[in-house]
Image: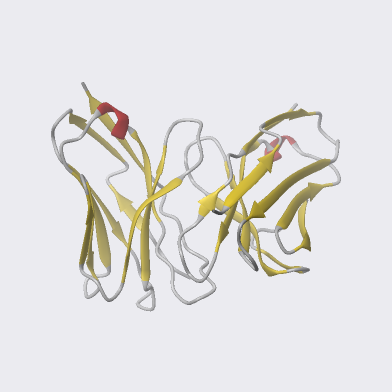
Length: 112
Length: 111
């Protein structure tokens, strides 16, 4: 099965700094690469995703970059704000049935 | 627009009691449906998924079961709860290889 690793497991930054979370995967057939944000006590929510035919996607302060050769994709958050504090999960998937493998999560803490 | 309903939000049940959690989806047809459990910490464990009515795939052998009696209804059940069944249960749906939309979750405490 797919082996997914996220790094770092915890990331602490000052408000206004940038944050980068990396996700590595093992299945070369993976073709869908989403990131989810889960605030404390709430459900995970899809915040950005990318497909294998695209190298980068941006949505305001967040972006996802994909390196299929190296089998990793990263979440970039610029100008971090305290409300960005949450656990972030990557969940690469392949095929139309979409059974993703979730990473173990990265706890992002943004200090005011 | 598509919405997902999951209930109850919280539940405290004694060991050995039965369980029934329900999830319904609106605004879409033939979704893929999933049940996840999130224990203390933050990992998401896939329990069951369904690609159609009556079609259930189990990822983890345990004392839980799932059923899909209607296209947009997914039920998680247990005949006898264990202490280890405590956790945050999340229902989710997806269509056509897109990302998940999660329900609001049920926090189950088995005492």
